[in-house]
Length: 78
Image: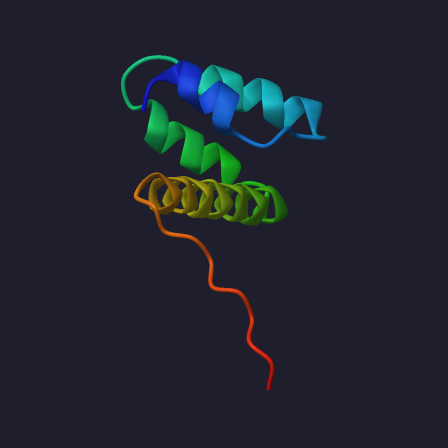
């Protein structure tokens, strides 16, 4: 994944030091491995990152389904 994509598709961090280290980690070859290793130093941020990524995947899936003409079913009365 290109560095620019990581920068625009990652949740904002409250921890300035971690954000700076992650910015360094994503430079050059082996960036994804370094990024994951550095992010793992903060379990709360790691979980937040994975949840953020999952939400983006769901959003892309919903957009694709909508482009294919699928719409959510309206709830029916019980």
